Length: 492
Image (cartoon, rainbow, N blue to C red; front, top):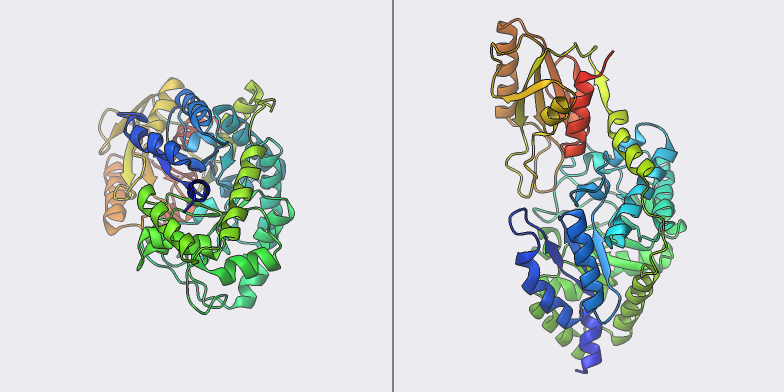
């Protein structure tokens, strides 16, 4: 195999660089150096601090022999991944406002902050419809359940993002809204008839393509009605080549979601899944496993004809086209003070107040944390945002395990429960419900009112069926915790 062919294949791989609070990017250094030496086409950045990410992105581009795609999942603003950047409410919370301009502005702010850090590819928006409460991971990530409305919102998000010089990504084709299992945990099959999928689920993707979306991400799920072989869409030529490329006429970058997930590699090695994904029509692959092993498998596949040389070159050209499109000069608009101030206010604006008026807080506010998500792999455990926001506002807020005599004001129960990747559940644990009921009973015994705060999809706090004043805060992200804290103190 020629050295050029080897370099071409390496450009189709995008490994993950993970940041840790203890060691920053230090643990990723060997991977970074090796990946750059191989000539990968970019990286997926997971976590980090704003200034450190900016420095890393600059370093990666300078050391690479070709312009890189630097991707991050920023569905909820740049602050979703990067400390110091602006966190935003989930998509469904913003769309619940019924104001498409707020959605556009959220997309613009996210793109401006990302580009300032050197991140040139936002793996958003989610185009999957929110069709089933039994879907274990979708929830507030979706724009909603109505295909036509979602299509309009998707196109607005894509156009606003790309107007700022950042690539958008429509995901997860052909739609994961009907999944009853989590591809982060196991193989998934969506047995919906083809006419339903084409009429509803594909509608947002058509809108994204019409809006010129730079990239589409594949779904790690099988669709027997679209491909009788029952291969996951990521490795299905029928779905990627015939449906997406030919029928929907998409000719931009096609990216395979994390190739290490069970949804695509169950029953096959990661390297084999990568070969099959490129053969099916993917152009670049996220998290392709061991780089040397995967690159070796791709080389053998190219040598024996499993991978077509012209098909590989086409993917290389697509990747380079978009990497050049997002390359400097950096004359794009940077986020202004007005941008970030608006982003901070948006979290307060989306709060929903249910079951009556929240009573005035006491001078001391006791907050009990009930965490239904504490067993979810990869979750972020920061649960202090509510009390910190209240303290900034002058309230003596405290995290407690139960109501005490230190306060006679309302007792706040903060429920962290959401649809999350790797959670695998759509119902509260019995232990969670028992814990909440015990706290309510203790507060009642002390003649104290109770206020619930739901930090997640509204459907989770609704499972408690409690008729007490409730603040729906849409997610457990720090930005929404802080908004909830301010909401508790809001004058009514």
